[in-house]
Amino acid sequence: MPLASISSSFASFVGDHGLYAVFGLMLIDAVLPAASELVMVSAGAIAAGAFSANGIDVLGGRVETPFWVFFTLALAGTLGYTLGSAGGWALGLAGGRPLLERHGRPLHLTPERLDRAERWFDRHGDWAVFVGRLTPVVRSFISVPAGIFRMPFGPYILLTLLGSAIWCFALAGVGWGLGTGYERFHHDFRYVEIAVAALLVVGAAALLWRRRSSRMRRAEKPTTP
Image 1 (cartoon, rainbow, N blue to C red):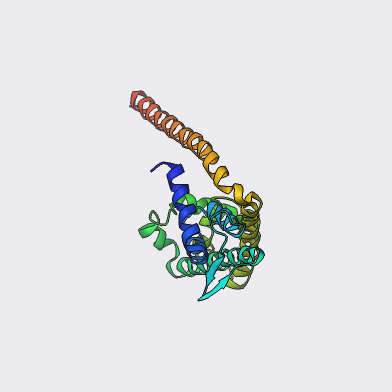
Image 2: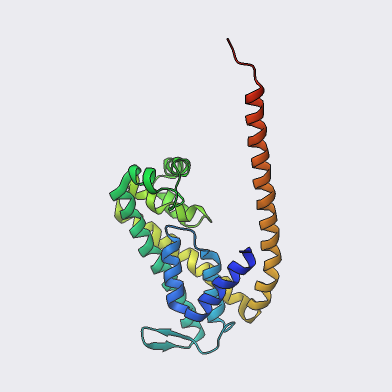
């Protein structure tokens, strides 16, 4: 499925389901990448009236003031992400490295990524969580390793909450700033997505060619008697 179609589906889903979509998608993003950038920008655009001027449903009630729609959606993203992060930490704590040996690939946590995460924690200490929550892509691969490395839950959840609040409110602010121009932005942004997809294809092809060349060189290397 083209990246433009994926991003359009996310925007539509967030627009249709508001608070619950933001909370659920951010909860998932704490362990598996779920396009949190697009989710929170879409949430800010909802607050600005890009999808609807009628507000959002909240636990049977209705929030219609634009600022409070913005605040509620950003808070939902923060809480959803924090709750998902707590689950990821508990999963890592309970399963340890054997968990990744058995189920690492569905979690997108290969041994190589775990090694990188360990170096990340060694470099930043407990603040690796805070820095990671503000770093695209990395932020989704912090939760389970934090449990595996037995980071204390108190500092972990506090730094996660702080980093996630900054991330969610900042990106929702971007969506708010785009306002009713969001649809035009989203339409134009698909060309950027196409360019990124093309670069990924070229990069993958180059990597495959490099690996194939390496294997051929090893095959041609004479064997030492």
